[in-house]
Length: 219
Image 1 (cartoon, rainbow, N blue to C red):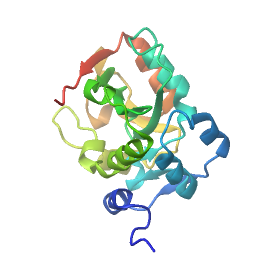
Image 2 (cartoon, rainbow, N blue to C red):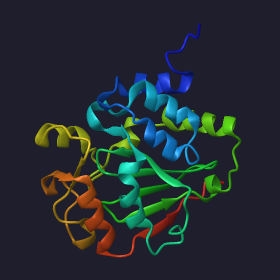
Image 3 (tube, rainbow, N blue to C red):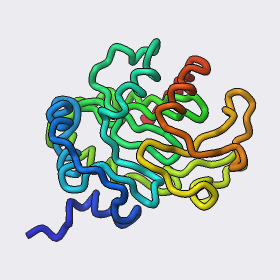
């Protein structure tokens, strides 16, 4: 019998982020739809736990089908527009999306608050075996830190706990966002934030101007 509840990496993630909340049972039709795009390891988490939030909504394991149109909006007109191997696997309370590429791992992060797409070219060069991709998915979760999932205001002060206290907890289709976009001169402060429907926020943000592509060179 294994000494781990799931595996060493996901058990570590649970130690750091706590038990899952707001869980929605996994639909096997979604697994069938994504079985050629995402690793089996992720499906095991889905089947066991469902799509859930962690750390009071700081981070979420999501149903990628519900995020496909959002992803398409961000990638439209970009060098990634024609790729069919990209799927959203998690998001933060502030709407930042983690995007997985089949056999490669996390290759993009999308920040709707500042209209940024972060690209990891080194990861995009990967060509994982099934076993290695499963391992990389485990590392993806164990590598998360609460401070990295949080969002800083213009003074780099963490916002999540303050937003949670002021506005309350999030539903699965909600995020904390800015009333007035920083891209249009809005302040990056708690007083400029509110709870907003995630899909609406992303749709508006992606159309404000062409997203800026930030290349993260981890070599």
